[in-house]
Image 1 (cartoon, rainbow, N blue to C red):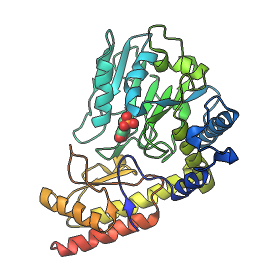
Image 2: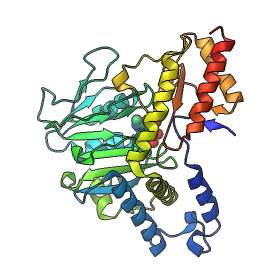
Image 3: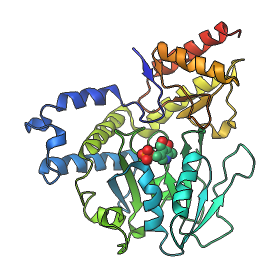
Image 4: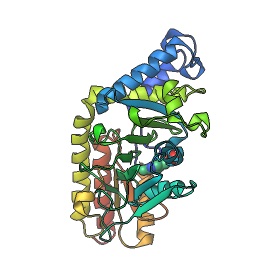
Length: 355
Ligand code: PLP
């Protein structure tokens, strides 16, 4: 029995995978698999509607917001967000908190006529603060709530006057955020939700306007009007997402999983901090609960750790190629036993390597 610590796609709850297997031959006795049912059928409508309702319950999303299930993963939203939301002042700001934030910033910079402020951290090693930028007026301030590669998180979102847009790809449903603080939230599905290829977009209705110059499929307003089925929607992804939402509701919702995530992360950070071999340099208040990075300081030893862990069934512990070291991604589906197994292995590895 192994444990998958991959940053993305992340692990899915075992119960969800089992349900998919059971449903596969004949979804709801239709004689067809979920991949074959028409997106213009009552079966689809009911499934997609239920997924949306369950997500609304989990995140307490009010009727002031549309919930969209769109193709293209998180990355397509890097372009769609400015094209749909930066239409008034043509001026936006990005908190440059890491690799994915920079990608989003670069995508915005490619748009003609848009002024993009690049907000850097005030202190090295810390996240740039969420506050009203001194420039403006802005169509939005962009924040990446969890930086998947660097292992940093904005756990608190202060109330400010500038509209906020959030990329929550790697910690949506892992810790509670107040949706009402954001004009738009998006997340690629493949970490805490379901298979890759889909993004969930939660957007305030009053920010939506038809965008005559955009391709229809990039226009949030049209997608909302067509209930995300302007073209053939990502049916399988929506179905799997719906199962994950049901699983999370049964588990006790976001507050309950947040407790578990805090406990798992605390145990792992404690063992890193108490070790003589491993270290994590992230300031405590910014440490991610989801992507926990650590290293020995010796690239060869890090590599040995990852290879030996893999042999023990502790899979995908290598850090992102840009930063090296190790990274344990503890998405919602990670059982406590997975974290315990990792900590046991770290202790043994430390002893074997002179600790
Ligand atoms: N944003 C964040 C924070 C991510 O971690 C990732 C992928 O890991 C993305 C965006 C890109 O998502 P996708 O691969 O679905 O385009």
